[in-house]
Structures are given as C-alpha cells and as structure tokens.
Amino acid sequence: MNQVTKQTTVPKSPTDNTVIQAINASREYELEGETIHAIRSVNLDIRKGKFITLVGRSGSGKTTLLNMLAGLDHPTSGKVLFEGVDLSDYNEKQFIQLRRHRIGVVFQSFALLPLLSAYENVELPMRIAGVGAKERSYRTNEVLDMVGLARRAKHRPYELSGGEQQRISIARAVAMRPDVILADEPTGELDSVNASEIFGLFRHMVSEEGMSVVATTHDRALIDMSDQIYTVHNGMLELNESSVNDYDNSQFKKPATVTGSK
Image (tube, rainbow, N blue to C red):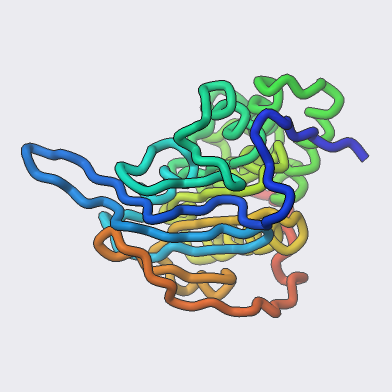
C-alpha cells in the first residue's frame, strides 16, 4: 500500500514514546507596560496514541499553550521538546520539516483556500512537500474517505457546511500521517451533532491510526472521548481526569458520506 513517507530531518528518540514535552514552560507578554502571564510553569507530556483535551474559558491560555506545543510560539522560560529535542534549537529547515511531516494543525476557522476544491485543499500540503503525484492522489482520496467526504471532493469550501469544512481541514492535517494533531477549538463554530462527529474522528485517529491528538474545547459534553483532560486556568495547567479508554471504537468510524444538500 502506498504511504506518505516521513522525512528524517527532525531527530527522533528511539527509547521514549513521549512525542512533545513541556517542561516548566511559561509565556509572558508586555502590554502597555504591564506583564501578562499567559502560561505559568506548565509541565505536560504528550505520549504516542493519546487523546488529550484542554478545557478552560476564553483567555485562560489554551491557545497560547497549543501554539508553543506546535512551535508557532516559544516559551519565555522553560522548554518545549519534540522527541527530546528543544524546539528552540531547531533551525528553519528543521521547523519546516516538523510542520510539514510531524505535526498537523487544525484551526477553528478552517483556514481552507476558497478557490480550491476540497480535494485540492487536502492535496496542496503534500504537493508543497514534494510528494509524488500518484502517492498524493492515493492519500488524498484515502483521507477524504476517512472523514466521509469522498463525494464532496470537487466542491469548494463555500459549497460545504461548517461541519464539512472542518472535516476537510482535519483531512488536510492528517494527510502527511503526522505524529501529533493539535486542534484549537475545532468544534467552536459547530452544532452539537457536527461537534460530536469531529471528536469521533479524533478518537478514531488515535485508536486506529496511532496518532496523538491535543484539542482545546469549551464543550464539556465531548471530553469523555479523551484519555486525559486538563483544565487551563489563568495560564496554569491542572490534570482534571485521566482514564483508561475502553470505548467501542466502532461508534467512531468515519461519518456517512453526504449525498444530499448541505
């Protein structure tokens, strides 16, 4: 079977299943002469094949923490490691490889290119990464099928519902078979049915694809699908609940393909 090959530019740890680790990570901002403590001495291990949710009110620091885990922002003090390597030691080329091949990001706003079809939105990152045409086609169709939107492949974003657009953005994020998916409020703009389907897809990716998922959310009705639940409050992280997930994963299979109206 064709597979998207991961690049080896980013160092890997052969002995530990911890993918991302925050060690006493803090982030401060200066705003009009005042120091804003967005994140305060956070310690967090993201291990392979785990689904972690971060809950908390707007402004609690969830997005700032997620950005540091993705390497989009750096801690003022402390460290964020990717497989044992401090992200602050990465050069530009390593960061590019990290974002293209090892970490997938899902945004609340979908961030789809409006003039491209669903298929083209999913395929584009692989084209940029230099994946061959045959392999791109195979993987694009595979992940569109995974999210239940194979028959919507030729539709542009404005022809899709909010839930469908978010599923396309997830397909794009997982197309390169990343180790970790980081999702910032992925269900914030969706109704309860679509939100449940999105979290179901994450559960499937953890259980069946072996990925790690970290998702921020306000919706406490969805957090039971996760393995670990953390509360973020005033920039501080607290483990709220950790459980052995014994769900019947058949209920989290891909959504039915939409054939009718949006």
